[in-house]
Image (tube, rainbow, N blue to C red; front, side, top):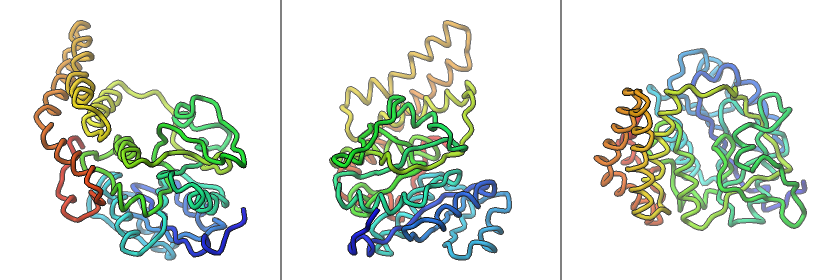
Length: 316
């Protein structure tokens, strides 16, 4: 792709949140070194217990390493990088998972596309699995199982949602939407962010001419993990800036009672208590969540100011 002089001046900050990053360091950071479009890189380490910090400090001195003394969670660690982008007058941020890597043309292509389509708040590549041989299973669900081919007329494909393994975001969007909500520790924060991106009238899409590999292992979700994901989903419904009061109450507060009743009828008392407790917890924190949700509608870069660092997630 040919880049204009204006695009060459655009500055990109890639943000990677690491926790026991060691297995993917070479592939992830190596792909950024090979990028045809330059990017600065910050790695925010969430108190890794392996040799991540030592390897980064010794072999990757060209990155900026931020060491947290505790695990901040995915969203809050990314918020540190986002604030650096604002303070450093960057034009774009690129959120990249630690277990992911991109093709050399990706960043330059996104810069060009973002200039041409400023109504897109989040641009992503085609998500492949770790071997690069097929679509990432979650990405395949987001796009309906089929991969549309881009055209000169429309080189971006709009989708309702894409996970935050690869998010390319203009800083102008950060200044309106803000960072990740501290209500979420891990999982759910990307769903909430997309809700807010859409609230401000931006679109979300992927560029079919670019690819990234996401090396997460597809395996059956254990029942206890699925229950926790359900609980997080209910929180995303209540925090959704686009939902009605009825939708928040029905889909967030009352929804857990359906699986609670089903579990009770099957004699699964622990599950029944879990979902009932989730409903009660959300109801007790409803006003608190509503206050944060309303703050997201004020046109300020919420959750990037230091005051929000004291907000605790609903569930760790």
